Image (cartoon, rainbow, N blue to C red; front, top):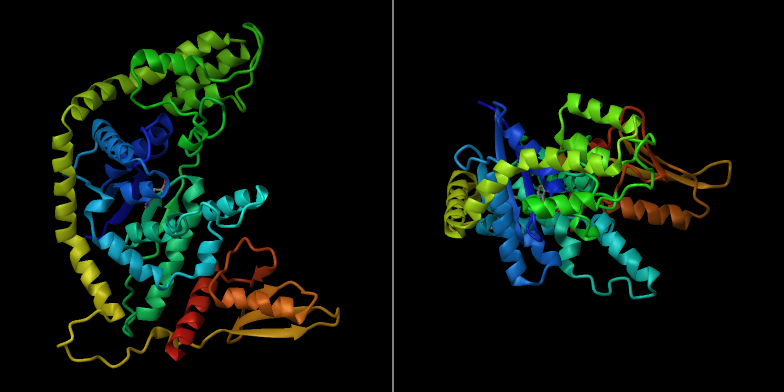
Length: 438
Ligand code: TRP
């Protein structure tokens, strides 16, 4: 039976908050109950090390997030539930992917670029204070996903670029090491964004996030939950004045927990000028009604960390036996990390050698500008804008040749009937051909 594999991880760098619950845990558990779905939920503790250098915090967060998943109803016998650092195949695959990942592509990762931009803004060296873990973060994440050939990856908007990168690495690997019979090593994963819930607002109205320090802990004790909810920022309208639901953090939070009916009643109450205090009280009661039974289970679970430890180890052990170990073995074979006694296989003809390679064509138009296009046979895959000098056009081609293509780039347009995947595939094939020559 073929099933869809759904995989997601939570970085173990903080305390689980309502945003994690609404954006990740709750939808993931709901999805795992669909027939035909094989779910993989894990604690991304290697990812935590990129940002956190307090060992006790990593440990505590790992425990809290594991307990949160379990308290919310995760059944480790029904879904794969594990800790990233218990699967040594993940860092091993990270290295295999590192060796085919385009550095140029990683340079453009949002998180890394934002850190560089901050440095520039402060007049610092580009890479001041940036560790290589931040730079490599997308490769580790790709290994998480590709090791298990996940089809769907539920994530927030900010993670979509990482999934695209995972696709890019998978494609390159498939091109470089794919078997002539056409059997692909990696499935290309897709991001799934929960449009409605991905942006749960925090106390100050910005996205609820550890980095903004505006979170509401999922399992805050009742009194603390109430205090936090009453601290949500609102405007200065007095009771009796009609209030906007649009842009109201309070309303959005309510909506994330309420039924459609309750939501429309609240919309009505806003229009009729419900006081902020009353609205907050209603929000508190609504959230507490959903969270209270989970909180009770959470407290019971967290009192026995050794049981959780055992469950995680057991999950990882079974998962390795079932998939990871054999999978990595096949990938090691594919790249040439092989038994020396085995007959040496002739350099495998990659698929790239049978398909016609795309070529870059540079030319000058009557407007005096310098253009290029990427063509595959008759098909135009990419068309550039006009550049002022041949050097600029050439430099741009150079970047693309290294595989750094982003469909959002304004200076190259994708041809008619061509998808970004086609372009990535053609560039990967070019790179593979280059690598074979080298
Ligand atoms: N980077 C993700 C986040 O911060 C966590 C994560 C790590 C992840 N590996 C993953 C999510 C693999 C999905 C799939 O939210």
